[in-house]
Image (tube, rainbow, N blue to C red):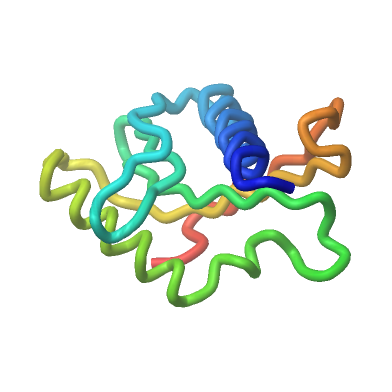
Length: 123
């Protein structure tokens, strides 16, 4: 898979994750927010929490669950990026870090991708 195809597939997964949050009444603030420390796939709020979500798209979980690919180093980059976001966009909302697993066996051709939102996946 080329870099462009991979990026397109990643954005598709992020759009599915955003829709899952919207269905639960969340408002999407940003998608693919970047700073010098890294990227936050999805930022959402619901009036109580501001969520910084890492989205992981996989065909299946035979080798490992998608959440297992969010290692300690990745968590640290997301936390640092979230601190930068909050410095630029102050809020009284409680921050939360989620991981969203998207399983799509046939890539973007998958009719019903499986989406798992793991709340408070790391702190």
